Every structure is written in structure tokens, then in C-alpha cells.
Length: 256
Image 1 (tube, helix red, strand yellow):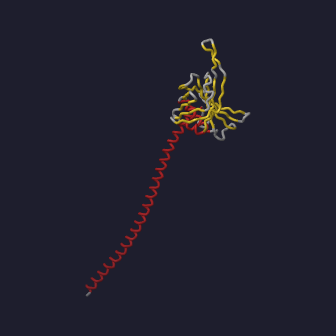
Image 2: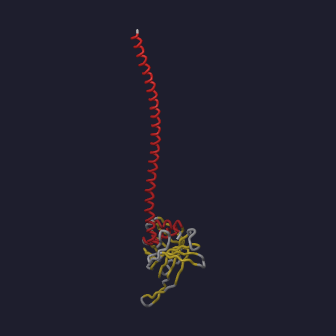
């Protein structure tokens, strides 16, 4: 009988121990499960943060690449401006014989006038006279507060003999697109030349004034090829002369 009681007691002890172990294991499993859930949540948060960081890094890399390209473009433009307009990138004058623009302030009128150099202009057809091209613009005061509405173009012809006397418009061919522009002023200086050492012939000098507005200046500044037809004469600026329009536009953008 005592042996039976001892066996029953042993079984109860084992069962009790098993129940306790099972309860502890269940608690541990529950704790581990909760920890697993929390770790998964943290992992998801880390992944989300990483994805945002990757996206931000990608955006910053794209912006950096764009800024590098933009800075390279600005460097090229600044160098072009220095070469073409005789300016530093900040708009200061460069005291150089190669500077192609001059600026002067008139105290009487209170205006500043900026003029380009005078460039030889190629005649395609219609005249044997020498032609010259120059540009100018002006603004109130010694410093530009607002961009000028027009840039004035001067076409000077020496010994042209009055070929432009009755002309009212100039037709610009800008990369194949034609634009008709009014001739705003005409000036004529009487000249006479001796022919064959005997008789004289009147061969007047002529100057045409054309006002170039902002849109036309933009077109000319971007042009690859420009031709100007005035009456029976067709003129064609060289690439360097076409670049003058770009230089003028850049000067105005810099407020110089």
C-alpha cells in the first residue's frame, strides 16, 4: 500500500512539474512572440526610413548633377560674355583693347548709353558699297534699374549712292523665318567721287536706324544664320557679328 502511495505521489509530482513547465513555456513563447512582433515592426520602420533615405539620396544626386551641368553652362556663358562683351561675369568693365563695348553717362540727359564696336557687314547682293553694323542701347541713370525696351541697330553704308533712300522696312531672315521690321530713321551725307579722273559722280553715304525689340533680340541672339534684305540689297552678318546680339542680351540681363 505504501508503494502504491509513493507511485501516485511520484506521478503527481511529475504532472505538477509538467504543468509548471508548460505554463512557463507558454509564457516564454508569448513573450518571444510579442518580441518578434515588435522586432518586425521596428524592421518595417527601419526599411521605410531606409527607402525614404534612398529616395532623398537619389533626388539629391539628381539635383547635384543638374547643378553641375548648370554651373558648367554658367561658366561657359560667363567666359563667352567676357570674350564677346568685354565684361566680367559680375558686369564690370574689362579695361582691354579687345573690349567690344563702351559705356558713357551723359550728365545733361541723365542717361547711360552703351555702344558696340563697328563691324564690317558682308554684302551678299545688291551693292558694292562698304557696310558697317553697330548696336546701342540706353537707360536712365548711371546704373540700369530696368532693361531697355529696344536695342538700336545702325547700318552704315559708305558711297552707297542713295540705294536705301525710299526703303521703309528691313526683312530679317532668321534661320529661315522672316521678320519684317520698320526702318525708324534714315540719314544721308552727300558725297562725290571722281570717275576716271574726269567727271564726278554723287555717291552719298547712308545710315539706317532700326529698333530691335526684346523678342527680336531674343531671336537674333539664338540665331545660327541671319540675313537682312533692304530693298534690292541683302546683307549677312558674320558669326562674330551674330554673337554681338547674344552679347548685348547678356549685358542687359546683367544690368550692365
